[in-house]
Length: 229
Image 1 (spheres, rainbow, N blue to C red):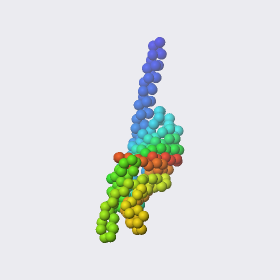
Image 2: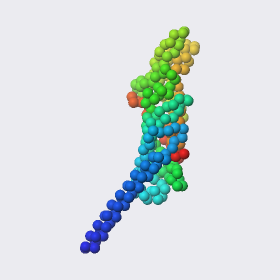
Image 3: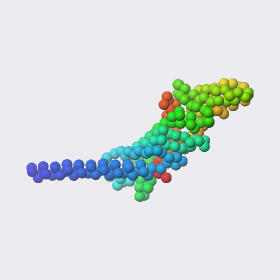
């Protein structure tokens, strides 16, 4: 009985040491990964990596992780030649495989969300144009146009749509002077615009866009998503 108790104690100690070593290795790997993550066409202010699953060491030995969560904050990219800031991107990556020497990582599939504030949309729009929430899932775009030599400020309610995997479009539902030759187009040159959110991890694309009080919430989806390079 004494020998059995000693064996049980040893097993508990060894198990505790393994868990401690596993968690320590996990923390080190997450820190290293945060430093190595690269995104094409943009840059992120901060990167947070969280590797899920236990034990970590066996996943590392196989160079494959069941799930990795990534948070990119203060991401900067360009839209139509203008700098645009994406406040936060959260991605959940599944079946992540490491490349040779851990120099790269690719996820078989991924889902996520991105948030763009109206202040950042305003900064990416034409000079003098402001973007705000318009209620009921719409945005309000305000700009100044010159009609008959007079500057006139106009606000329109606009719909935000996804053009393709990286492009969003803001288009007014109706504009003042609609149907009057030249006037509608003049107003739309100030209120309608589109741009690319080019800088997401390679393979991650825009899926759905919703205008909320806090900004544009963008659903993301993708396959063969690369975290480096």
